[in-house]
Length: 338
Ligand code: NAD
Ligand code: DAU
Image (cartoon, rainbow, N blue to C red; front, side, top):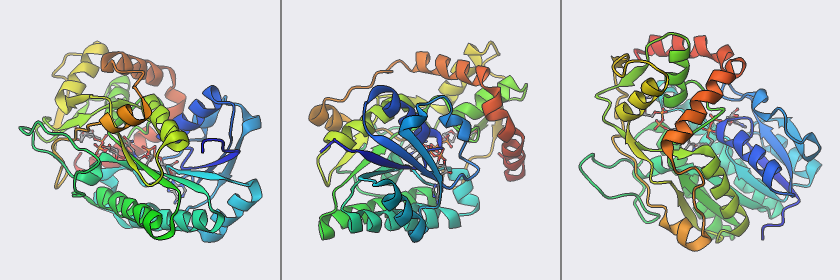
């Protein structure tokens, strides 16, 4: 099942997609990769620099465009698709849900239909947010059997996409899998997201910003670990199945922020409290025993403090990567009261 000659990686110029492409080219002999990306504000061509270009093609295109999708599949002889392409940021979804519905829902539908026409293997990259949130005093964790209960427009659009993927498997027998991962962190993440925003604020001499009461909990996983897990599911996963990907990394936002401040040599109370998101999710936590038991997958970077140090070092050394989008991102946040 895992012998693909040509893999279409949609959204491959974004955070997780580019880390996935780098990982596959570095650690696996096959396949050839075609990145298919719309190059929205969230993409960065520099994220794909320094890789083996003999095994990589980069095509600009929109997953909502049937003709463009058809063309890239036939031009390159694609035999599998991994769909990372999405609008991914909750704050943006609250301000304007429209692109989330088109890319995350309609785009996934267009890819599923293309996969069906060409009988391609299809993997959908999804999120734990489809399961809604847990209370802070509830010690349970999401499993593959948890009900879908998305809270915000981003989560609802990803849940809709998951439903389409499952329906295409049951109705048409499409060869699909889904992975729902928890919050990723690591190199090449856009500065709009929590961890890189705070690191780059400190590097710029700006005070970090903490939403609400800072007690919300996220279940952090190193992006490299999500990439190894997606590879295992793509190449060895059971068709039609959903896999949860997490690394037991639960921490409150204020804990994470204080760790960042401390490691960057700043006082732990040197930050601003700002307003929370409407309908903000409190706690995410994943039980990833399914992928551990069935595929034997284990995270490689289980120590969050070490991963955070590496992430801080990466942003310190790569200002050329993030600086061009920093001012615009902070201007937008300021207009929104964040
Ligand atoms: P990102 O925003 O960094 O990257 C998204 C990429 O998709 C960008 O390169 C963008 O240009 C591209 N894109 C957007 N619309 C497109 C379109 N219509 N056609 C083609 N390309 C398009 O996102 P990310 O954080 O790397 O997330 C990747 C996937 O993983 C998403 O599906 C997201 O829902 C999911 N996910 C993310 C996390 C996380 O913590 N970041 C956790 C779980 C799941
Ligand atoms: O759980 C998986 C999801 O994780 C993915 O599906 C999303 O694509 C990804 O963006 C992420 O969503 P979150 O909303 O959890 O991530 P974000 O980095 O935006 O925020 C994490 C937490 O930090 C959240 O509780 C809000 C808070 N926050 C965020 C920002 C940007 C702050 O306190 N300050 C900030 O400046």
